[in-house]
Amino acid sequence: MHPPKTATFDVAARTNTDTKGTARAVDEYRVTDFGLYMSRAMVARPAAHWMQTWLLPDLGLAVTDWWWNPGHERDQDFYLDVCEIERAEHRWLLTDHYLDIVVQHRRGALVIDVDEFVGAVACGVLDPAAAETAMHRTHRAVDGLAAHGHDLDAWLASLGIALTWRERPGGAGR
Image (tube, rainbow, N blue to C red; front, side, top):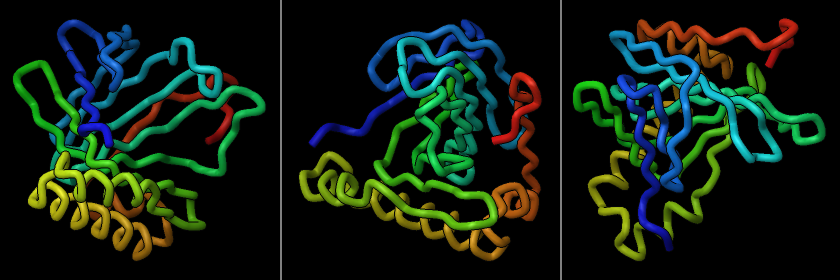
């Protein structure tokens, strides 16, 4: 079992160091009262060519919109990583807590990677307090999504959060 993955978002340097330790140039950062937006190209990833992510520290979530390459499309609109997000001046650090939520707009939300989560707790690489927090965050997100018809924007709006996204080339939808 691997230790929790981390990613660094350095607003001043305009870089994002991914979970494998590779620093990538960021096209756009936006800091708001509720979080951080990042948009960048995916390099050397056959399945996707672009990603845009909102870090929402108070919810312990990273919300990602992947732009899939033809033939690699997935039946998802948003991918939510359950995580811990810390901010130190211009750097934001994301520590993944294994659980993820696949959101299908107005159709459903599916919690995935439960096996990794359980394994991490059993092996001691995710301590019990962090595991409990991750479970609460996951349940809050799934409950909030369900209460708002699996509409991510509606749920977040009920919390005073309005996410804005980069428009896809040609105006193509999610």
